[in-house]
Length: 554
Image (tube, rainbow, N blue to C red; front, side, top):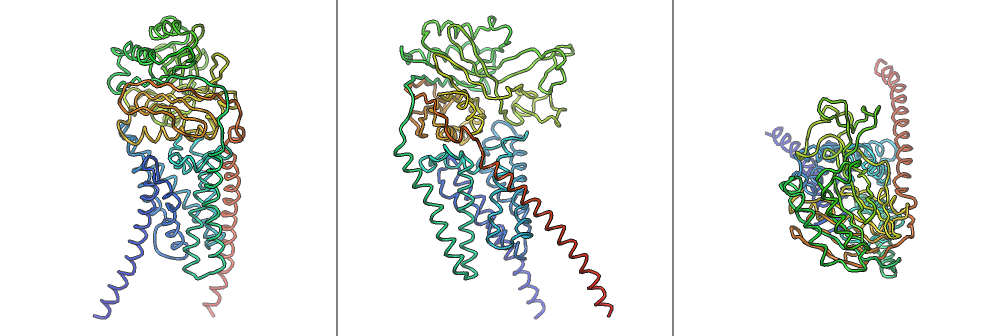
């Protein structure tokens, strides 16, 4: 009976930490989700990673638990709860959730191994910073680009706290979040061990690191004055259903006419730009046959009535692949012929004389871009039924000009890429436009999150943003990140605003994600240290093994 009670007690003791670890992992997933736009409880992000870091420390000190699966659980919850709406556009969302949670877990576990080998105490928690920031930079660069959940994006709902993004970009917010989470974790750990001096140090550092950026930002917000000359802009939200209308040839003329009819009452002699959404022109524009596109004829006719303005609008464009370039991955073959063509997602600027265009560079994974190693899917749709293969991109951001102004027109997903958008400003853009089609996601947090991110681009570059979405939200954002006007979901609308056209280039626009690049170098040093320490420990183990054997023989 006594043995049975001992086994039961041992089983309970083993199950206790296991359940405790799972609860903490779920708590991390829940806190990060609740902090994310558009839930809007951003301060929760400052404690979001604390539960998982406490689990990591327990395991690092010899406790039971599989950290990889616990961290995967935490990050999977975060991914699913915050971006579940991607499912509305494609079932491939499931793969995106799993892969992103997997990558995050790998990063967290490499940090765990480094901490155990190099500095297995609360101070080792700071190793997470370079690893995580290097990973976030990778989400901008590799073929599966998904910077949506980069931690610094969370402050889009608290933009008055991060006016210093004009110096650091979103990476500065990530650094802030990580430091605060680690200091809180260390306070808990030092409190448990009754280590008074490091406890006091961490509490003091925590108060300073948490409050000082907010105080500085609040002061910057209060004293910042918008710069540049006045420019009147009209934004159109045509509100057509992408699933049933926008890509149906029966509605091509109607979509263009809706844009004209909605904007016409708002245009004044001071209006310089009319901005409409991504993919509004679906007639199919061959760049060598512009005079044969009815939509362009309609818009040219409209602009001739208001020659003081230019129309910025999205459309699908095509061009022939030059001979000898048929092996280029984005090249698409016409039937069984020897002719190949490129397909672009383009932004067009139409005035009375010219048509300028730029092609989207940062493509949406799976929807517009398929990695070359998945070339077997090149000619098939794996997402929304209308997207096949990979689009041809511009190698860099390209500005368009009108009436002495240079504008940067970010197309949809590009507005989530801070350093990329800043390239427009480095090339002289004094206004930023975001043209997008968020209707694929339906009435979900997706389109609201996407709108919020434009506030961060405004602060990073100190540029006013005019944003046109096919359906809500469209709006205007000033250089401080304040929303001046916004439309409602699923309502045809047009709005007008006078914006400041600023030409000054911010520190962040000039230097980009320099904090993340520093993190990459530190990650390299840490990783080399981890490998070296592992090899040295292995050699020591081998040397000690024969001695232990000899002692046993004696």
